[in-house]
Length: 298
Image (cartoon, rainbow, N blue to C red; front, side, top):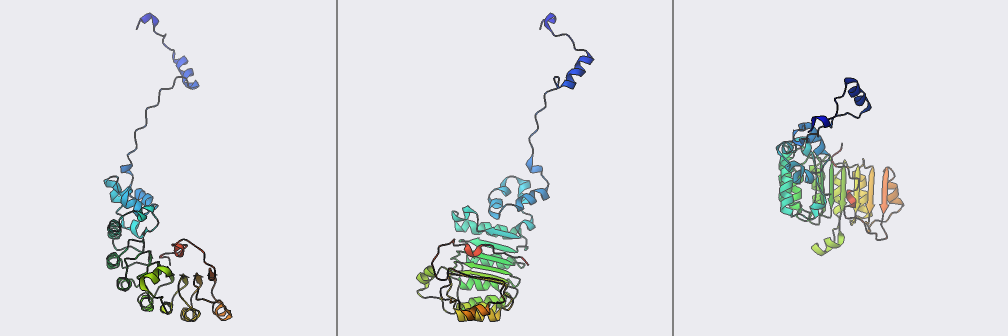
C-alpha cells in the first residue's frame, strides 16, 4: 500500500469517542460449538426422564458413550411405557421384546410400572416377573401372546401390584384367573378390564360366563373399570359386597347390566359412578380403558 494513501493515525481521544459511540468495535469471535457429550450425567438423565422408553432405547441413548451412560441410570427405568409410541405399531414384536428386556435390565430391579401393547408374550412376562420384585403397575393392551398360564405364573411373583389393566387380551380370561390375581396381589387397588366380545367369541366359540365373580377376590379395590364385559347384575352385586373400599366404578358397553333400584342402592357409597353406553352401541378407542389409569401410584 502507498504510504501516502494510508489513513492518518487516530488519536487516543478520537479512538475513545468512536468506542463510546460503538463505531470502532472489534468483530465478535465466532462461538465455539457446544459439546453436548460433556453435559453432566444427572442433567442428561433428567432430560431422558422426559422421554419415553422407546425414544431413549432407539435414539437418545445411542448418540455417544456419555449419553449411553446416562441412559443406563436405573431410576430412569422405574416406569417403562411401550404402548403409546407410534413405532410400537410398526416394529417387529421380537425386536420390541428385546428392547423391553434391555429396559428391565437397566432398571436393576427397580422397575415399578410396565405397560406394553401388542408385542408382550408369556416369555417376556416371565422375564419381567423374575427381575422386578418391586412392580406395582402392569398394563397389557391387545397382547394376544399372553395366555392364562403365563399371566397366572407372572402375578404370583408380584405381591406388591397396585394397578392392573387388561385391555383386549383375549387369551387372559376366566373366573379362576381373576381369583388367582386377587389372592396373589392382596394390595391390588385399581383394576381395568376391557374385552372385545366379538373377537373373543370368534376365538373361543362361546361367551365368558360368571368370570366377573373372580373380581370379588380383589377385596382391596378402590377403582374398577369394566368395558364390554358380560358382567351381570348378580355378579356385580357380589363384587360390590366383597370390595367395601370401592370408590370408583365405571361400566361401559356391559349390556347384561340392568340399572335398577337395587343396583343403584348397592352403589350408593361409591364416589364416582359411571354407567355409560349400556344400551346404544357407540364406537370408542380400543385403549379407552387406559384413559386416566393411574399406574403404580400409592
